[in-house]
Amino acid sequence: MLRLFKENTKIALGAIRSQLLRTVLTVFIIASGIWALVGILSAVNALESSLMSNFAAMGSNTFNISRYDFSSQLNRNSSETRINPIIDYSQARSFKENYNAPFTTTSLSFTASSVTEVKYENKKTDPEVSVIGADELYFENSGLKVDQGNTFSEMDIISNLPVCVVGADFTKNLLKDVNPIGKTISIRGAKFKVIGVLEEKGSMFGNKQDLRVFIPIQQARNLFSQGNINYEIKVLVQNREFLNADIDDAILTMRSIRGLHPTQIDNFGISRSDDLINQLKTQTAMLTIIAVLIGVITIFGSSIALMNIMLVSVTERTKEIGIRKSLGAKSSTIAWQFFTETLVIGQLGGLLGTILGLITGYVFTRFVGFDFVIPWGAIIGAVIISLIVALISGLFPAIKASKLDPVEALRYE
Image 1 (tube, rainbow, N blue to C red):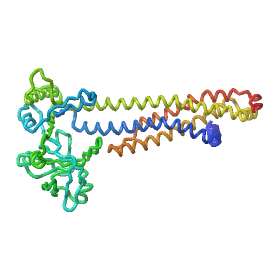
Image 2 (tube, rainbow, N blue to C red; image 1 turned 180 degrees about the horizontal axis):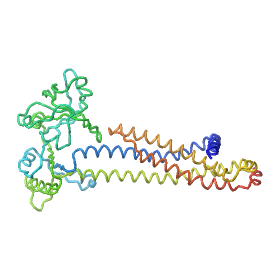
Image 3 (cartoon, rainbow, N blue to C red; image 1 turned 45 degrees about the vertical axis):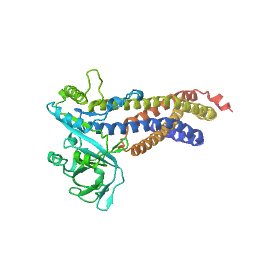
Image 4 (spheres, rainbow, N blue to C red; image 1 turned 30 degrees about the vertical axis):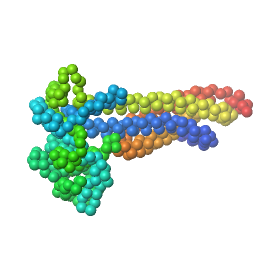
């Protein structure tokens, strides 16, 4: 059986070489659908893995109060978007002082700048560093952990000390080949002592999370004095069972601070970390469905193209089939020969499409800054689709070839 399979494979490869252009076109038809399937699923897997790891780091028992509700914005029509007033420092501070839910920690922060140049001795970064003003609870509430040193202490914030915590990328460029702890960097001419380096986080939607500098919130307010600064409030709930009740209390507290009447709708957003994760899963699931539909279309399109080339091949090789049958070849041998040829073409298309899809997915994830994840499900799916295409396309031509009458086949011109 194994020798017969090898012989049929050898004959199939010879037939493929004799019809090279037609075979190449068929292989590319099969590969194009597999390419799209694997490429899309590679990008989706990388996107989902990166987003899930970032949001999961915060845990499922946190919520944010911000100007807008990001989770609802994911599914909101742009025409329905309202312009909410910013959350200024007095409102954010008032919330932290008045929100008294037990077993919760509240942190305040704001993005002071996203186009800052940072200097160390005679070296400097490109003006692409984000500067975050934060308090001592921000890191725990955001799921950020240090790789070296420490984050802010309560005394650092109370005393408004010129200290900072930097992202992991600083150890690869500005503070490369030195111990970053204790070094002094310059931001807008102000000196800050590095007390900690965060663990690597990667990028998300082009946002370089490892190229951020965190300074005490009052230092940031003094250094970046632009108007209309929008503050963000993060709340960590120690006991998840009280999450809903604590969110309700937070809404009431914020409504009171904002001076809203009972009939007025909220003019701020509450974003739960678990809601964000579920919303993102829904969005990525839609992309997966699209990829699966492409796979289904691939089966039909590729099957028709491959079946056509095999039927033409049977017609062109009618006399060859007659000679083989007259020499004693069984119908099953003839059928297996053509089926093997179909299988080889299908697998070549599947292999080419998988390689192109993986390359496309890798290039895309590198471009947007995600970590590439090998889509094993997509690869297995590509193999299965290629087999299905071969089964569907090869069965009828193989049966037709095996049923040819040897006398009529020999007389065919």
